Structure formats: structure tokens, C-alpha cells
Amino acid sequence: MTPSNRATILELAPVGDIALLFCCLGLSYVATVHQPVFDVLNSLETHYPIQVFSSTFVLALGWHVALRVNGLYRGGRRRESLRETLKVGWACSFCALLSLVWLWLIGSGSMRNSVDLVVVAVLFGIMSFAAILTTRLISRAMIQTFRARGRNRRHILIVGTNRRANSFVRELAGHPEWGYCVQGFVDDQWWSKQTADSHLGALVGGLDSVPELLRTLPVDEVIVALPLASFYQQIAGIISSCRDHGIAVRFLGTFFDREDSKETAFLHGTISTITLHDESWNAWAFMIKRVADVMICVLLLVTLAPLFLMIALLIKLTSPGPVFFRQTRMGHGKRPFEILKFRTMVQNAERLMAQVEHLNETQGPTFKLKNDPRITPAGKFLRKTSLDEIPQLINVVVGEMSLVGPRPLPLRDYEGFSQDWHRRRFSVKPGITCLWQIMGRSSIGFDEWMALDMRYIDQWSVWLDIKILFQTIPAVFRGSGAV
Image (cartoon, rainbow, N blue to C red):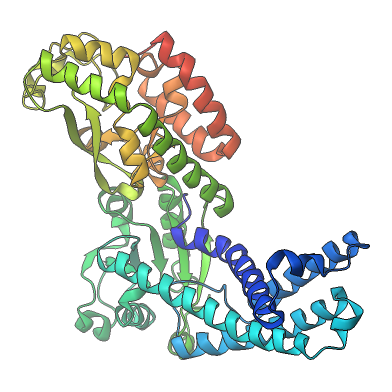
């Protein structure tokens, strides 16, 4: 559901490139005519501001077309350095030509006849080429560093063990910088000896085991390498299971079981897939959500620092043990992470769980107990006011959580899930607050809670997040459903 970071970066890249090109154009003009920036702006025809604005907008649009036509925004995981350098060179040449025409149109009469315009255009072409290529090389190096450390990796499950699947996985193995991690192959047997001998992934189960694998493995995408004509029913079942979990499904190769199709699928070293199911959020809106998360959380951490310190002192003075409670929770893509909260229970609360588990007051796999004997007096106040959640702002800043999203559940609760559609909540980042939080919290049954999470995922928008955030404040003061 949540789009990958790659999609967000691809959406932001054109805006950054246009801004970079305008900077290069301004610098090249100033370096040529030796005038301050404000004098350059005054040199434009001020009698026709609408025409100047319109021509500038057309120039930006022309730059964008030149960059896009030359393939600078096609994918982010796979790039060939020489080919990309040539593409950037051609794109910047077209941009320089467009800039020359623009300068001639908006320049004064004296400037239209000056060779300085040609010098500006040439210098702009050189500067823009260096700037765009450098930013891409730096970005790629940073992304590869993150992926080498296990960050921003896409976990994929390959359905099929034929030669088509073998070609696909071999290509991925040859380019670890793309950031893909193969979780294994799914098939009733090894249909290709080459695939079995490649040791690029284990046979983790048969075709009927896909639902169980999706429950237990972190999987971002399922790649189907089976011939569609021969395995239509099985593929339909796989798509249905992936839809329950909110996982994308892509089909590899052609729609027909022909040997020549299998061999020509990757002759040119490209990965070609057909998307059978994908419910990714809009990348622009997701980017806004992430930026807002970081900005708001940093502001709150600074503003609430005195309160943060007071709560820490309260905990230390009223009960022995650490200030923070750390627990492994299930996060986005079924990836575990460590959540931070102010400690509200006695120090050995986790070990005492077996003694109170039979007192559970909720249905389903979750555990809620209003008068839990493990809660300290200070902890009861912190829970009632939701102040124990403040440290989760740190989880949001580092990218493990969001301000708004389904509440992260302990591994114990996740292991008790009985319906696959419940697991679809892990297709987005968990949040500090959500619809469940503002509509009653623990007073809501488990199935209704899960239904609210599905409603949030299906109807998500930036505006919905804003409404939930504002409605969280009175819900916290009411303390309804808090345990």
C-alpha cells in the first residue's frame, strides 16, 4: 500500500532538477555579464511581466520534457553509468538550446545581438550537465550505502522455478545495488536444473503454501514466473492472497507458455513485468505525509522537552527500573521494530504476563486489562493521558512509524491473527494515532478495530490524517477507552 521510497524520489526528482537548472542558468548569466542577480532581473523587459512569466513557465515545461524524453526518470534501482551520462548530456544540450531561445525572447534589444547569450547558453549546458550528473551519482551512492546496510530493500517472493525465473533472479543477483532481496522460490518442484543449481534462493514451499508464506515472511512484492495460460487458477489464488495482505503482484514474461518467449524475455538485460495487483498510495501525498511527520515530531520533541524530563523523573522516583519501555512490535511490511514508550508497568511486567493473561477483557488476539496489577500508580496516570506515547515521536522521526496509521501490535498479538485480511494493516506504516484511537480505543471490539484500519487504508488522504490528528486531542482529554 505505502509506495516505496523509490516512487517518492522519482516524483520529487523533476521538481529538484528544474530548480537546479534555474540556479545553473542564473549562475551562468551572472558569470558571463558580471552583474549582480538583482541587476539581471532588472534587465528583463518589465513592461510585459505576463509575457515574461509565461515564457519562463514554457521554458520550465520544455526542460521537463527534455529530461523526461531522455529517460532520466525511468526507474531508480537499475542504471548503467555510461548510458545515463549520455542521456544527461543529450538532455542538457536540449535544455541549453531552449534557454538560448528564452534568453533571446526576454532579453533587451542590445542583448539579442550579443554573443553573450550564446556564451551563457553554452556555460549553462556545461554547468547543468555537471550538476545533474553529480546529484545523480551522489544520490545513487547514498542509496547504495543504505541498501548495503539493509535499509530500503525490497523483499520479493518468486513463484515459479522455470528458466524465466532463473534469468530474473540471476539478473538481480548481479546487481545488489538495486536493493532487492529474494526470499525464496515457490513451486511444487524445481522445474529448471539451472534454477536449482544457481543457489540464489531456496525452494520455500509449493504453490499451495503462498498464503502461509505471506503470513510468516516479510514480502513487499510477489513475482509470478508461471505461464499464465497453464496456471490461471493458481495465479488467481495468489493474487487473492496478496490482495488480503496488501502486497503487490507482478507477472514476469509473456502470457503464453512458449519456450522462445522465456528465452527472449531478458536478452537485453531488462526486467519486464506486468502489474497484476498494486494499491500504492499517491507518491506526492505520501511525500507530504512523511515531511509533515518529521517536521511536526521534531517541533513536538523540542516543545515537549521539559515535560519529557518531568515524566522521566516521575518514573524514576516512583518505581525502580528504566524510564523507557522497549518492545518489539510488528511494523510496515511485517518487519519487526523496537517501539519506545514511557514505562508504565513494573520492571518485570513482560515476565508476569502469564499470570494475568487469563484476565484478558478483549476478544481476539490482543490483550487489554483495565485494572492490570502490573501498572504503577504513575503509569496509570500516563496511560490515562496518553503521555506514555510521547517517546514514539522518535520512532516517527527515524521512519519506523508515522503520526497517523494503524497502531503497532506486539508480536504476541500478531501471531494470534486468524484472518489474512487483518494482516493488510501491515501494508502501511504503523502510527501513534488512528481511527481506533479517536473512536473509543479499548472499548471497541477487535474485528471493528481491524475494520477501522482497513477503512483508513482504503480512504487515506492527507486531509484524513489532518482530521484524525485534530480529533485525537479531545479524545485524549476524554480518556475514553484508555487502559
